[in-house]
Image (tube, rainbow, N blue to C red; front, top):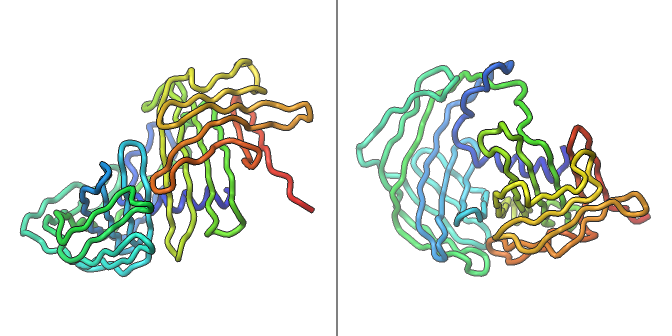
Length: 310
């Protein structure tokens, strides 16, 4: 796995606060022991139509997210969390210093599907203290002294995970551009997936997703925008072979189109005015000579890398 994909995978692991669901029927499974969990979660309404979510996981750290439709920005700052307190100062976007206060209402939930052990406990209440967040460029803001909150706890679990998942896609394309060699340099990535007709969801659909991610002052930042469309938005003139000419035409919030085609030198060119606006940073180009690409279809894959100087 490349560094860029590994970084996103690690971020996705932190975002998840629940265990996976049931394994698909007929797949081989193996058992995994997962530790006990303790999570404080609350949300607020930010300006610009954004929903601000805060998840503090005692084992994995803090996640602050701002979401609106299919656009989202995720921030993973350092900060102590444990017991009933959450304290963090996400660099450049504000401060969170609150304490969870239970209101006496508690609910028991069953264990996750295909997991053994006792179920989960949800305690309801509020967080009180100081919450002040300011998105880059003012794309969203929120300031509050309290918010409704939940505290989830669960014991260690013994779960069954599938060894192999059925392949749900029939074509996969990735274009990526790394601004520099360091983790603090932003990486921009476009993923396009064409799903199989039997996949549920999203059967016979094309999913476009653009990411930008980097580290800043020991905080991981991930921005993304996605769109789902029908098969006509990924055109392959020679559908019976590995395409030498692909046309991508995603719907809004994406703008423009892009083309992948074989050049006379037997390399692949990724060109076009395709772009998208990401929360807090504005419009980003998603095609051009600075991008590398990866494409798989019909059992065959190719990679197009940039030539290194020297």
